[in-house]
Length: 91
Image (tube, rainbow, N blue to C red):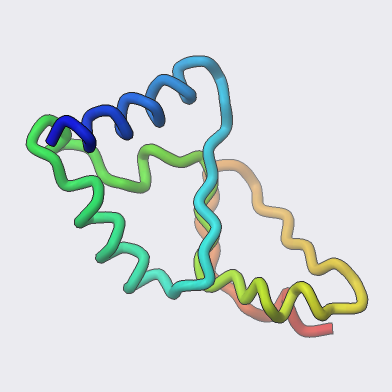
């Protein structure tokens, strides 16, 4: 439990100092949510979700696909807006 507290302190401390935190993964949301719930499920944070530790979360990023694109794919998302799309990856 002490290791969890140190990691959570690091995340909350960064945000307290106006640092932006992001999670970028190739895994889909369902898998990511299960793993993150396991990692962030500590007794002192029962009212806090794992998503609340990050400013930006990108799942199913298809990083291998992006590294072979001839143009850089981008997706502009308004702050606070949730979105789910894959059409932005197609040329």
